[in-house]
Image 1: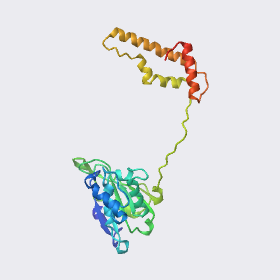
Image 2: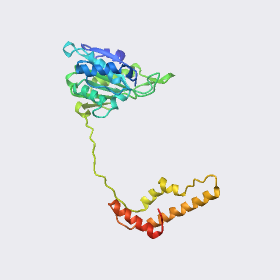
Image 3: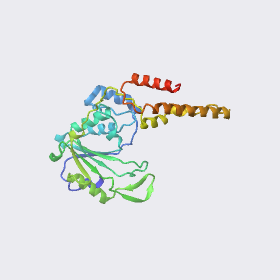
Length: 292
């Protein structure tokens, strides 16, 4: 927050501060061998013990690197801030590298706040961005809590855009955002959650296949929209117009014959056995003289 770090909410604190704005969505393939080796051989003794994100986005590697540089809480601790796009927040299901990294951060109670920033703040992209604030020495009233701040409307329009940058955060907006963060009170722009609220499991629920068969107006309409039914009245004889017209006419007759035969089954009850329904269809089409 620039000069706002000197306001009353931070005076007298012995924290070290680290600020970073890494490039968004940069792949780490060129360094993959080195990073994987450190992850596998050093584990939590290195920088990347918590996990590795997908190869096309190294944002959470930057964050783990910064966490590794934090001072010990007994020496005053560290607060760090890093600007991300939305990917580190949402990418990766339970058990993935991204999810494991987020879990590690939250379970260690380092994530203090996430601030949703306005869009169009950067020269080369107009996307919304998010400021993550982490510390290894939370104040007592913040322990076990994560603060979410919606600052997406706190900006002023620039008189002249610079690339994709059309908005900027002025001193007034910066003071408001900092005050919301420092006050740590729920309100229109602030929500506060327990760490455990962000935990989740991925569960695959499977159930037996349940089929049912019947003929009614709704299903007949769906039949009319299927490719197989439509193609009955489509001709492939493009060079012979008369033959094509005859083929299309025959196809339309077949379509109508099928519909007429099926209309005779609309009074039947729901059938849950495929073989039984298939035999009933065969008998109906044979009786109607429809060859399918």
